[in-house]
Amino acid sequence: MHGSIPSKAREEGRSRATRRLAEADADVWRLIGLEDDRQTTGLQLIASENIASGAVREAVGSVLTNKYAEGTPGKRYYSGCEVADEVEALAQSRAKQLFSTDYHVNVQPHAGTQANLAVYQACMKPGDRILGLDLNQGGHLSHGFKLNQSGKLYEAHFYTLSKDTDRLDYDSIARVAAEVKPKLILAGASAYPRLIDFARFGEIAKSVGALFHADIAHIAGLVAAGLHPTPFGHADFVTTTTHKTLRGPRGGLVFCKPEFQKAVDSSVFPGMQGGPLEHEIAGKAVAFGEGLQPAFKEYQGRVLTNARALADELKGRGWRLVTDGTDNHLMLVDLGGVIDGAEAQDRLAKRRIFANKNLIPWDTRPANKPSGIRLGTPAMTTRGLDENDFREVARIVDDVLRGRENEIDARVAALARG
Ligand code: DSN
Image (tube, rainbow, N blue to C red; front, top):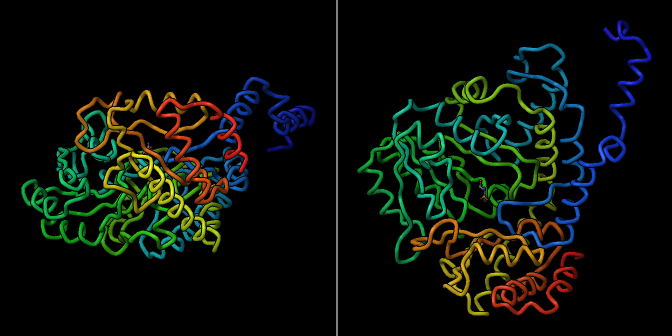
């Protein structure tokens, strides 16, 4: 085929293909530079973000972006998929090794929401009932929120946290499950600072004849490192994103018990998506390879130690934390009316400290001006911050929230430099 392309055109094509971004598109190059600057000179405390390695980013920026590979390894709808097959099979085997599981895994979902919707489509019909944690209490929009497909296609029901402890109340979840009789029970959250008892969720699901789906997007890195109880063995389906504590490229994964393999694979493609993003899948493979190194487990341990230091120092400075602390990588600060969450987010961002406003359980304020902010340690732990640094992060956050902003920029810059 190449022979039919005049060599001059081929050369031009090649030189276009290899031109560096700075020469080829100064506008986009400048914007990426600004974002790089924002990320490296500020404090990244958004609990769902992390910093993927250069190796992951190189894979994501590779020629694999040029390839269509609809189907699954060995069963594609296009020719020339031999390399894509190997890349995807490698990502699958590493993902299974990382979570020490023999569940089937599909590594194609473009994001966590697609992974969740693929599960629902694999095991339910529109109108079937799902039961998950209320979004207002730390759940996720793909767990039945009315504006998400999960809330439009399925009859969504919710359990809440305990009003006394702000923790999951398994007896109450069991009662709601017995009343609702859902087809699928979901465990998993975007803003829950404590351990999740997946074994108990599995028992509850079994007791009402429901399937059990664990969405571990936030805590996947901790689960992989053995620092949070695993849902494998208890759940029929396990989904996750790959870019949070897992520290890979943006994307999703679905694991399922072997009996659901066919349904899940055809739910992802052609049910939810067309061509898989093989460049992203290569990035996932690289991240899983990194996750299998001893340094990854050490990193996850530091994420936890740092979260405890941050929580402890904030409490020492008078802030109430939801559940009074954290077992994982994140915490919810109740701003107690000193300032609302939106104002706090803006004021921190002006000082290059990035966190997100968040509802707290039983919040009486609206979602766009909630009572809390959510803070997490994964990204700045990747940057190398230790417990003492995180105590300083807490002091800086406290000073900004209370309007004591002298010298803040220099303190932020010193920490961001590492
Ligand atoms: N948007 C993510 C988070 O910030 O938690 C969840 O998908």
